[in-house]
Amino acid sequence: MREISVTLRAALALTLLTSACGDDPRPNVLLYVADTLRADDLACYGNPLIETPHVDRLAAEGSLFENAYAQSSWTRTSMASLLTSTYPAVHGVEGRMEALAEEMRVLPEMLSEAGYTTAAITGNPNIGSAFGFRQGFDEFFELYERRDAGRVRVGEFVTTADRVSEVAIEWIDRASEPFFLLVLSIDPHSPYEPPPEFDRFGGDYQGSASGKPEFINRLDLSRQDKQRIRALHYGEVAFNDHAFGKLVDDLEARGLYDRTAVIFVSDHGEEFWEHGGRGHGKTLFEEVVHVPLILRLPGRVAAGERVARPVELVDVVPTVLEFSDLPIPADIQGISLLALPAAQRLIQSRLVLDGTEINAVRLGPNKLIEEARGSSKLFDLGRDPGEKESVSEGFGEQRRALERMLVKSRQDNEILRVRLRGSSAPVSVRPDDLSPEVVRELERLGYIETEKDGG
Image 1: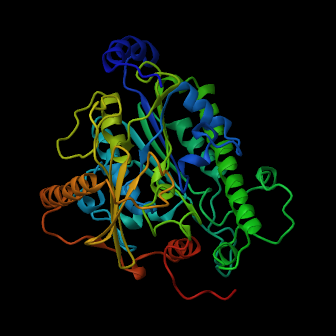
Image 2: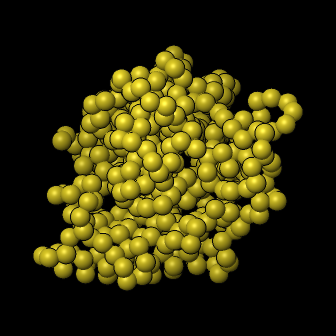
Image 3: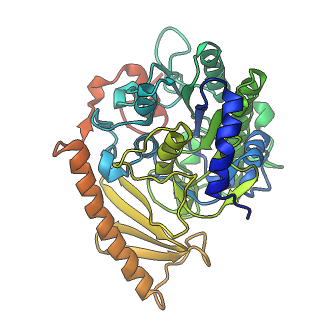
């Protein structure tokens, strides 16, 4: 593993960025989020079965964080942490109908106040204006909309990754610099229906498996069916990589690539029966919280660097603020990726959904998952990265230490929640407050259940 010192980065920064960016040395920022993408879905993270050349190129030209963790295993909670640099218990966006409170400061607000032009392009209604994510953006593009006039059908509200990139390119064409652009592509998310030219990872399968929810959620799937479903997901990932590449190529063609901080990340992963189920938003095992995080900005980030120290999505906000020479607020919980401490740090994830509360904390190779107060499992990720067997004998000290840290983190999060949001309850949205289009798309993606249209 090769790492560059913070001192050297700082020394290089002023000269290289000033020459690249003209009068304003602050970089543009592209924050690209690929929904439902686990770290081991990518070739640059060691997957030998898939081709992701555009993300791989970004990793070769920037820094790849080998152990990046999402703060939850579903989109809205995780994205709220990404944009506020606070843990879920602090920002309070945890239930299916909970929204981001106006009191929570988000990254686009901070950048907008500093003179950045800001925009968001989202293919997932969980990150939509209905749930409070509009704040701080000059323009906000919600790309889940009807394809045809007439009766609305479940599944009509689909936005492909290439369309997301097209809208991003159109916006960049007229945006003033410096700009901050958040892009959320939903293609890796189910249903897994890649374009035919990207459906090339399935081998000689002869069955009838599809990537539609009614099939992938069946309980009688054969091993070959499951392999085919995973292959369809790989096709979605490869297609998303292709669409991401179109956006990067456009930046390069405009001469913007080297003065744009490009951050590629995911909000959460996806389980493919590793622990008996499929999907996300149900557990906090590695397959749903270990996500890719890649960062490129010449002069501030070393090319080809692979960082093994664990990091979190909450670290993105302070990193961008440091890039932009802006003050880092005292009330955020992340650490700049340019100034990671040498000491081990506690990594936190949390899921409060559908009547379930799960908390996970990791320190070094040891990970504690508390599924209910008093009921917990300890895993040694160094020896058991798949979390197949909880350890007990010989790990009593590690368990007690993590349990104390979990209690302390609860206390710290509650203190910060009160300081930022007061004693108010989480902001809730009623289904009646949502447009029919948003309700339909949330239903299609499996986030809410309503009566089926029948047509």
